[in-house]
Length: 383
Image (cartoon, rainbow, N blue to C red):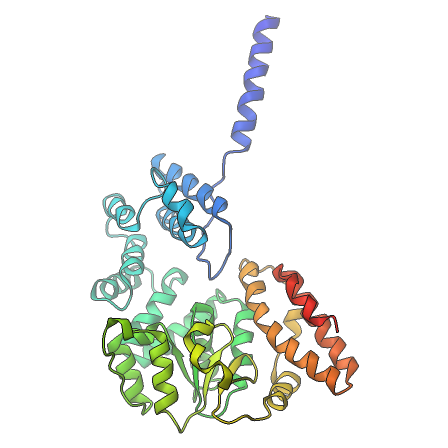
């Protein structure tokens, strides 16, 4: 009996750690909301595939499995390639499995639209099917807004932005940064943006809060799509652009076209945009806020930057917040965009002998750097 009891206890001891270390399936969000390392995405891909294999009725398991796959490729494509098999697989193969397992569902239509692109006929058709099942669900809002943008359906653009704003899915910190960017631009400016968190919050503020609707917010990636770019350029009175060949179809070509052909509007490029898109004009880009303003001639951009920072920007959220934000890791990285502003002002204040202002800016920079895990910036504030 003692031997049997020892054996049972031994088995329990072995089994318990295995169960305790089994990865629990967790919601997997896009990297525009949460940032994890490759190992976490790998664990989640394995966990959600296990849920599916066990016959879960939760159809979101397919969305989370897909996202774990996709985000893992962003995190480390080489590792993803080396681990393809049961739980890591190409998205078209995963989609075929989903089509058999969850046909005619909201979740499947979302995957079809996302994988094909909401600007394609297949993507457009499926986002409308998803919309019919679950109108304005937060899962489909980005693709839904893209769809209406491509259709130039202004009533539904405004409605979708309103629903997105009311859902509270968009972190307020990201909305505030979009506000700080928009509010600091010249009238009727063109603002070139790059990613999701640079684009959608600006559209939401323009359509819901009517903040700077005069500004043309141009997502440089979407502008590569001919019908969308042609319609937008026509609407804003910008000369049309025709690419000479595929090698010329680049974001750099679009920026060059705008700079050379638009002379009645100020052109700004967000600090979050890759410098590669304006590498030929770096010496003519002047920081004025959360964007760089293109100018053929030098001007006192520090005076403009200081005015925006001291009189227009909302910044309290950088110091402290009082609510749980599931997207905090992304917010912290977004806040790093302020560091280039802080550094310029810090140097300016020191040069002018305004040591109190310089210290205040430095303290903000310390907080932002620490939260983002980006302490390398602090060496520039050691003067």
